[in-house]
Image 1 (cartoon, rainbow, N blue to C red):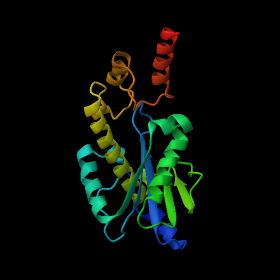
Image 2: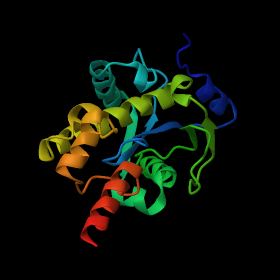
Image 3: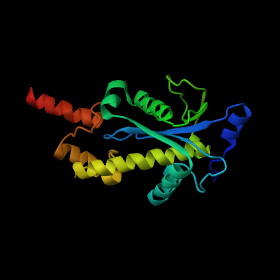
Image 4: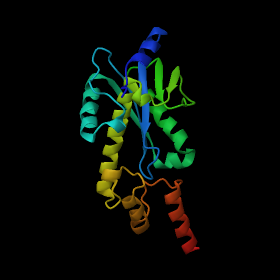
Length: 210
């Protein structure tokens, strides 16, 4: 099984770029909560061991790597809210979160490696899209770990305020527990109203009241 390496970063360095940020987002599929992006600039002389696509790591390992990265790399995290997701659509909101994460870096990068096949429209620096970048580039893998860890923590906090939806374990994804809770407990301010299961419930409620 191949693991991410530093070759994409080395290519960018060879092209004359001096400061490369890996960028990834998490949370396109959930029915609730923000979409969260992270931008990470690794120190090539101090890269934590075990960086990988966040989906291939346990929560405990992600937490440990997140804390290591915060201590040894430049890290920025940003979000797009459920309201922004409903207003723009999930793809544009994901790109908005990415743009904000890059803008929030203390050290401005001169190159961004973006997970996926699209580059956000409003970036003001050179960027390269890498499909399955979190499994190919160490910087993107680092960003995937940070974004996933931060978003999971947000959803755990929200689960304490809105119990019953299972957000502490499903992170807002449409699991059976979450879908049942939507029917039985209703829609919270953190739900994405443009997403079909939520929209359908809103439409049902509207039909009943009109």
